[in-house]
Length: 341
Image (cartoon, rainbow, N blue to C red; front, top):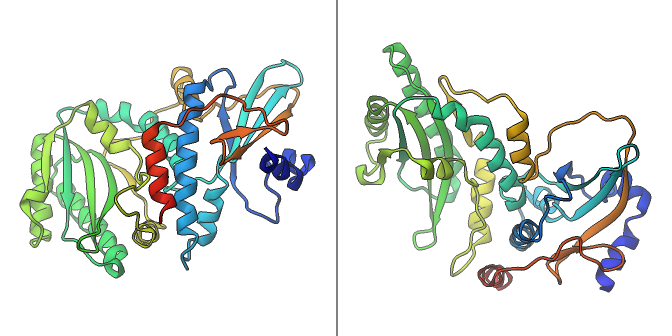
């Protein structure tokens, strides 16, 4: 319990309330609403604790590298490290807020991003007819070639899109860029997952892709009718917590650096963000996105809970958790993998 107390002593109450627990001389993180306190059940708190645990262990390994992303990894290490219980001075309503890093490799932020992407684009995509889930790959490359290969892929896709437009062929959908790493070959395989409207368009996309990437294996490409699983695959975390027989921080850092500054999610054609409505706002609040409200009065911090890695939970200065968290056995095993690196 002493660890939690010492953290609270390090950050003054005034600094905590003014900058969400992170002093300006330390690390700046994005501040955002987390969840309504009633909605943060033990189960949801446990899932968030699992994401926090795995992300922090991963970035602790990444921070040992001489990487230009060091400061970004450092910000992620503090992500969701503070929960602020607030009460409204007029209505008496309570809510919980937290600090976020907003990084792609952060499982906490990625869960929120997934919910946002699903809300923003799924309705627009489902309005399109005859949807297909397409996977496009290229030949694997070495670490030094990864960023350039991703840029080449984006340029090729742009050429194909422009060609379809010139031919008067509608081309609508959504694209996500990812990369896998092969520890056996020490190579990286960037690839696309797409949902495309129209079987003709999906097949034409594949044919034009192979024309421009003649060394790519046909068997590595794929077209199938889209279903609910296709949407989950499309919008799920771009970077999951990478756990295998041996976690490779250097390889993950290579992927994260290659994607730095590159837009990984891209709608195209007649696919646009959907307007926010109350129903979706309520749904998003379960994932950490809360609709903006304007109330008279002010929110006052009444308690602060700080992440304690020894208890896999957020504790206040009385060593009390906000919710009871349970870490699953498989998450403990994954954590052991990170810890053994």
